[in-house]
Image (tube, rainbow, N blue to C red):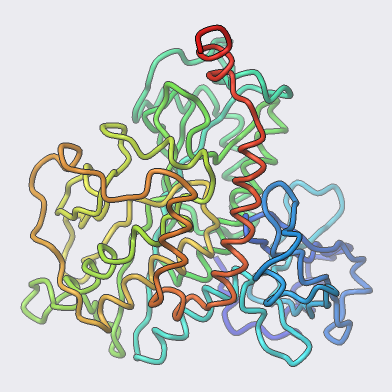
Length: 454
């Protein structure tokens, strides 16, 4: 794998020329993680082009709606000013499924004064990473991303079903870690790995998760910004590959009612100026920073839930005994807790946030979880005693719905400061619009149980 860190625009030009690229997909991740942007002919992609998009492009919800009034327009101009997009040369990758040689480049969003647009997801994560850099620290992340393969479904009123594999049959039972169950979809995964190799994505192992048709891909540990880019591109890649095999790939947190939900577990650690793990003392024991980092997660996770579980569907995943946490307990090698410390050598000591859903925007989720840890270390927040038993037997510590989560996020001043007040304002306004749209829908459950009985 060729590192592109430090790539200049001239390096980018040479890279494109060497691959005879004829078209460029200029990508901007929005608040939901959707790829927005423009497609340009290679000749039009120049450093001084000054490509622009309206401010609202990165600040819309999954329904594409905007608020009609309110604090949203204290951040975003009602006249919808332009953002100025600048390519990050280190993000360039081939689009492996394109017919003609095509590249994709992720762009950062700037305002007319040259400052980063503060509510753009990539800006939020950049700013958190800068806080670590200011302390002489380097954040390190390693996501584990779960998703479902499902049969094509063009009617949203019809429940999703597992896809048909090579055997001609669909899974009807849970096949956790089954090699044969993965082999059912070998042609698809061969394409996924081939695409990832051509795109130089940092993927590691693939396993079959607990649910029928549920898979998990692990990423090697790296800097959070680069990994968020990779998760963003990987989601796009898996969806495209699945379509080419007549199925859908979904990162919904709870796509199938009687199956486990999908998470994005994020392993995280911090290196000091010398490159040593900040979570371990010289004698190999856990450092105060390790416990403060956990304490920060415990203190601020509930207020971050709107960022980790961003949709009404997200909260269906967080229920007892379904491989999803319900509280902020922490423990060593304990998968019932929300904050897990895997067994590892002192140099690899890390914390795993198991609360985040697969549906979360990777930039926002990584920014939020590292913000929690940062506040924990800076404020020396002590962790609670370690949970050594089954945390599912304890009480819920997390909000149970999106509207409850949004109230907690708005009220948490420490998070507003480190994530950015304008980001929190825009994010909450968009999520309220989505929730209002959801509340207009009458569900099958309501028709079944209320129609003739109330």
